[in-house]
Image 1 (tube, rainbow, N blue to C red):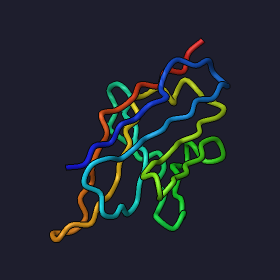
Image 2 (tube, helix red, strand yellow; image 1 turned 120 degrees about the horizontal axis):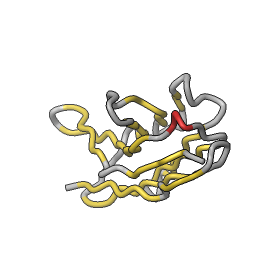
Image 3 (tube, rainbow, N blue to C red; image 1 turned 60 degrees about the horizontal axis):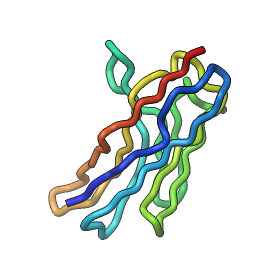
Length: 119
């Protein structure tokens, strides 16, 4: 079994910064892509950013230039540095990790961490 534990959420004023972290633990042999999704109240869950084992990144248009995703393959961690935060970034942020299995790729999700951007 694998667990993903997020940390770093909280309340921040518009224009501020937060850094989210996520650590994977358990029966880990290999991790493919890792990423962050978010879900705001009344909205569907959406992709924020992903990063492959090789370091290739992908971002939602709404966060490009403001958010940076990074990972440490040796520690099985993924981080999300969020700068110039806006009220529209308010959401529960979820960490994900893709694991190869005999049946294909399985995605694990963290429990989520709340990010609130408000003055």
